[in-house]
Length: 373
Image 1 (cartoon, one colour):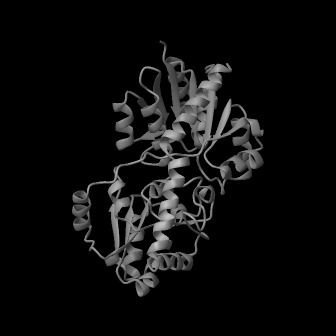
Image 2 (cartoon, rainbow, N blue to C red):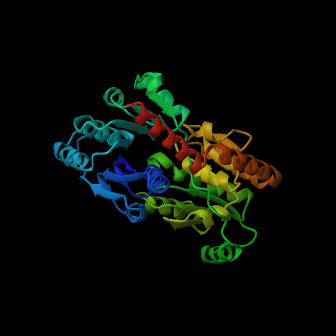
Image 3 (cartoon, rainbow, N blue to C red):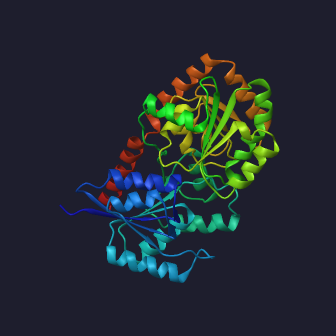
């Protein structure tokens, strides 16, 4: 049987949620039925390695200062012509642009775009151009209702052009107690520590990890055994480390760095906090909920569709250090509430936000679009 060829177009392959979702597609839609190739501007790290181990060639076309770089698109078009995909699937602005240009010029039967960001700062001109490009796809995927609103209301796409496919994450096994005990010892955690956790790229203009660190002095005044574990790497690591020193909380703030396997860290957390000022979905929230963690998250983008405020977690306003303080302290004083919200989050995440649910919807979309050609 002839395999369905899928060409994925992304901006970067590093450690982010977008490339993790496309890794999941490659991993799940491969055996005997699909073959994959991926084009991006730059690529490095374990996700790139895993894609290639799965037989998905990762080809870089180079970075540029402008959206329409002729050399980059010539290379993408050349790759598309040689591969002759049945489906070209682009994600985020750069990936959608590449997929539309290469797909249209090379006569690819199905062109899929996917908006995975919360484009609150995208200019009117950029949105206008994006809307024009997105209208040339066969279908645009929105990863949350907030993104769907952006595509239909601001980018002015017709509603039947947009398909809601909520993000999903892998259900990971809870690590053994022995492994957790070793990690606790390495991190310097004691048995009675109250552990706040966050996971993500240390890019503070968006992720606002500084707000969580800034909440620590007041939290420690009320809950002296609190530890904050920050899992992730990024350009603002040094500034965040300096902030923790300046506030006198460096002994209680642990920078764990990038971790390919985050499961042991989620298993150590008591509460998960995401302080982003912009978030299309918040994959790490689904991951935390699958570990039965109560969550504290900002009321932005797609987050209110992931977390039921007052049921599976507490939603707060972005940039509000005081609300982070209040939410963490309230959880520390009510373990029964933590347990109740953690259980509700687990149930919700299993129903709506697993990788298997996401993949089944993507595969059906691919099939439906190919059948319509």
